[in-house]
Amino acid sequence: MTTSRPVPTPISAHDGRELVLETIARHGSSMLATARRYSLCADDAQDAYQRGLEIFLRHVDELRPDGAPAWLRTVVKHEALAVRAARMRLVSLAEPDLDLYEARDAPPADERAASLERLGRSAEALAQLKPQEARALVLKAHGYSYMEICRITGWTYTKVNRCLTEGRQSLRERLRDIEAGRECRRWEDLLSAAAEGGATAQDLISLQPHLRGCGACRASLRDRRMAHRRPQPVAAKRRGASIESQPQEDS
Image 1 (tube, rainbow, N blue to C red):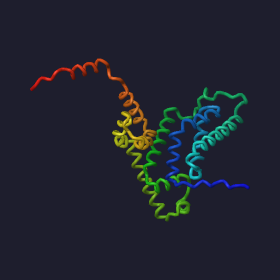
Image 2 (cartoon, one colour):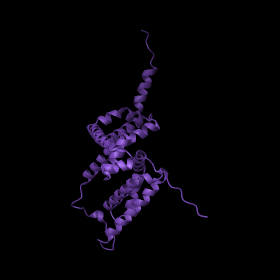
Image 3 (cartoon, rainbow, N blue to C red):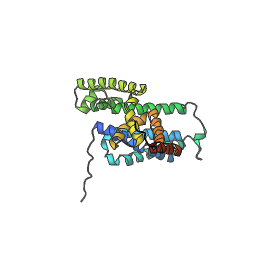
Image 4 (tube, one colour):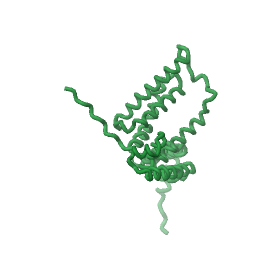
């Protein structure tokens, strides 16, 4: 007797967005390493990784959270193999080291780093929106029209228009706050607590989206941790102990 496979319960757009951010934060480096393992060069690995993320975004609502990392790793591997096959049709059978040759039309490393930084800031700003605003913006970014978003969400045209309008405005304001450093000041106390080991697990989870998109705060946290862990000089300790041991004169 055959048994039917259980159908995964669809997840909401908000949960899907959180799953994407969490998966990239926890497994992004290993996914890129997987792509590099099956690619001829680093640029091809980046292409395969980006293709895998695009497929992940399209199918995230069909996945189980516990199985998403393994599913994405398989997709990235297949995309890397597909890019490799396409590349091999253009080059010789002997595998060349394409990293030895610089693409003249490729952006320099600092521009690619800045692009990744902007992507991180956008993800942080998007995570701060209201769930309905974020869902409407994600659907619009996927190319759906206003009427198609109405059919997908069950909302009225007025609600879709309001979510998109207010969502765009909120997104711009949050991006301005992040780029102007105001968002960094909001996390100042939590950065200090994280450096000294006093932050809770929930605090660290809340801090992660900002750290992913802010190189300045990552560097600040690293410096604070190093300063906190740096041992106090022995001479200073002895001097402090000597001062404490001296008898106090009665006033």
